[in-house]
Length: 161
Image (cartoon, rainbow, N blue to C red):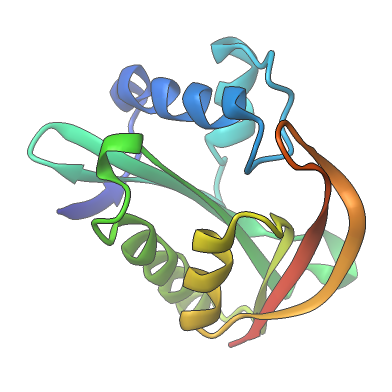
């Protein structure tokens, strides 16, 4: 597996990953009715942000986007989001993408990385982020409507860089 910069031709493989994750409505606070046309500018970060894909040969296994969490006085903190194809889960793709995003942020001099809305019931992601050095710094109770569990919390997670 290799991680490289996203190029426009990757969208044909990235969109099905994004669509499946968003439509499941259990891990991302995006509208499940999101279209490919609306998703593209949301997912593909303009510079100085970055969007990448994890590939094995010509197959996209996962994708990540990273950038500044907030403009102005908050622009010293980075953020990132990750999505992995169902058939590639459990193979270290998410870990590799997370490590890539952290290295990207460190290389650009960010003071920390913050995840704004990690669904607390998404224990695989929460555990991964904790292993990579993030801590839950707060939880908004009931802020996410999970399709099976009802209202669950959204964690804010942070790592100083």
